[in-house]
Image (cartoon, rainbow, N blue to C red; front, side, top):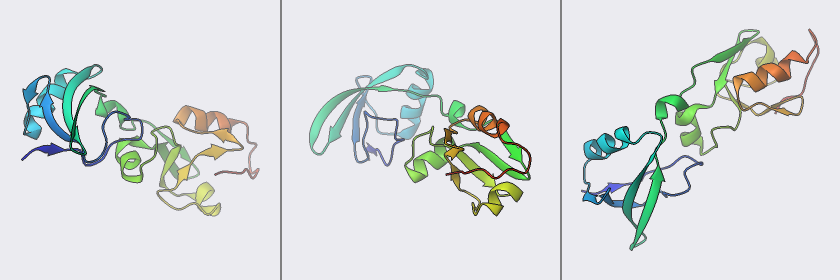
Length: 152
């Protein structure tokens, strides 16, 4: 069996779903363990791949991200609402960029009363984009107590 790309993050512009890995760093690579071992040594760098895309061999230089760095490690709590960055699992599943907004992990008083359910994506607060917990906190800091505010 060959390794075939099942899906990619929006930010990944080199590989496409359906690409078949022929060579990795010049060597035939047919197991995920081999692929993982090489990728683990190149985090923050790149690897050279020979892939087959729609029957055509294509050479590609693919950057290697640290997936652990793409997992949310901080959250914002507001009126029993819990939000965090979207994270790569949810971004990949919904095919959204990693900076799309804040993921509503738990709907509490504020966002539930606005009609947002769990797993909603909060992209803006008062027309300010909210791609990170810091950006969300900055947008919320301008809102007075008990004041309504638009979200999307």
